[in-house]
Length: 212
Image 1 (cartoon, rainbow, N blue to C red):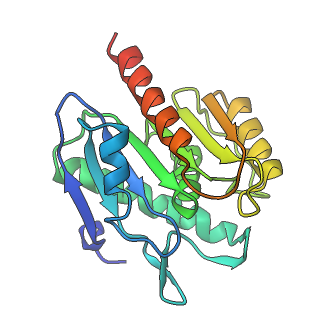
Image 2 (image 1 turned 60 degrees about the vertical axis):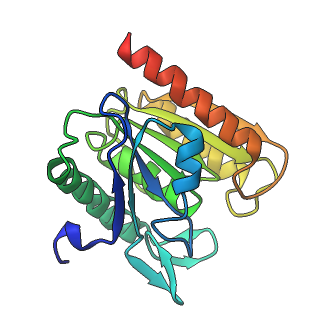
């Protein structure tokens, strides 16, 4: 792989006393997809928004899959490592080393954000996962996640992120010590207005707690 700076990405510094949101788009998205969402979630925050490096029939993704909901877990693990390395590069390149970085991902982006937080807990301070599921089926997780803050926003009728997988995700996170907030709404795959409201207040509450 070429240098991590070769990943197409957007960086906006935001306010230096606010966190940086690592924006992780869904399948077929790009580095500009979630910028409007970030402005609604935390207008003061910095933004780091890379483009998924994997291609699936011309669509950008974060890792390979064998079929709908069937992930190539070895590739998930490899790509989570690449994302952590990109983040380490960006912290230095943009001088954001001391700031908190919180992944905000939708669908495939939520899943790679969760995988990176679970496998590389030093890389991220938190994750906001919209329509995410458990990305590491069959892989033993033994990391200490007691420093991780995770907020899950899911629909109870989401065929692409089934409730059983969300339950498994929550169980793994809590068993490893993560601070978990969950919101389950009626409906399917997507980012619902209530998810945005909930995530914005979670981020604001978290910032208050961290700074106090």
